[in-house]
Length: 227
Image (cartoon, rainbow, N blue to C red; front, side, top):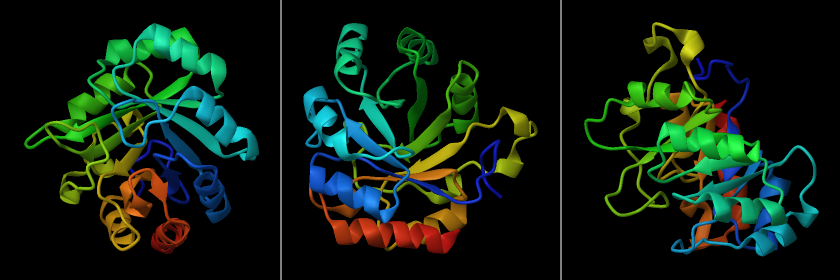
């Protein structure tokens, strides 16, 4: 059973950290549901609003552009959104529920929050704190003391919250699985966790920020095989 409050008939797929037109086209052609762009300058996959505006020129309807932000301030976020059409905000830093809700209200955008699976963390109250202020979903990622995602490591999938564990099914956010996913392990990851969606970056790359079209296709085929 899906972890989502609105169970999916299939697992949605986001390809993140896109920097090149050829990779955007490969993701679209392979069947990705969402395309992720990293607006975080320290990242090796960072892009500018101008770059993303150009990359999105050939993206057809029903493929969702997602902007990844790490502790972004209001002015920078508004400047980016003036230049590029982003459908969904992904907050990937230390943003509190209140900060996420404020930025979403300021921009009129839907949003998701990435949460790192730190050792011994009680994840259910954290999920609920963001859901309560309007999160459209929660992305669960591997924990690293210094990095905000893109670690290439997986967390213990047995820690992924199961839909049937909650006494209040209606309170559940759609859960997105990330962290260390590859074409070789994503099918097993889905079978173990049954997420609403999966999010991959490094697992379909030949180098940081450089996607491999063959790996993208293999990844999406593996996801489809697990549904």
